[in-house]
Image 1: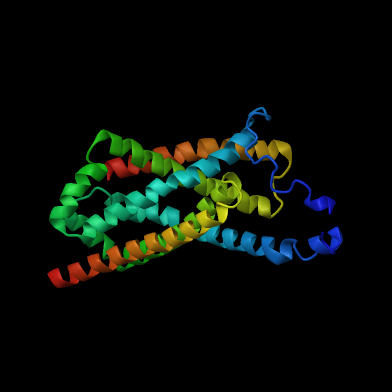
Image 2 (image 1 turned 135 degrees about the vertical axis):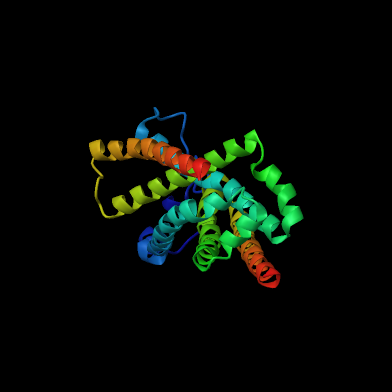
Length: 129
Length: 132
């Protein structure tokens, strides 16, 4: 049996303990993603499906390279909030935390893959010309 | 003690069988569906970037799979719609965070704005991408 009263167990678990921090993280990330999605749709999306030379030339322009790098980092970061929520809401207790850990690892892995690809494209284009 | 009774054994959302669908509910659920669906978008974006990083021959072969047939077009348009919808949904959250538009008539209008805004954005983006 617990020696703590209900009042004592609830105290400190409100917005200041966890909720507000998460709210601010997601909101900040949302502002960033809103701007980056617009930039992605108009700067990067036209390159998808283009011939190799066009893709490399387009991606290695400084502005596009920065946008794409930011997009990879920001999108994988933002993606984790979504998937984490799915595990918390729909997966039975006990398995949800394992899901959150796997999601976090995958998010960083995707982020690393994207940045690696960008660096490799940049280096290849520098060697070529 | 009473606070701990049966904790963790309560029904989990969504309670789809209980509520009649309405625009606020549907527009909110679509935010989650579009957001999680964008996992496909992240994977395809990484595929495309890694193919480009692997050199001209590899890129040409993979580009066929990524963008060269009808199913790819449907998937990319779906991704564009999901980007627009999820972004507009996020903007609605930012507006609501400022305690603006929380009354029912305005909130319902915002719900329809997400649906029509995302379709308009998808058409606009698609036209630009197909022409340019």
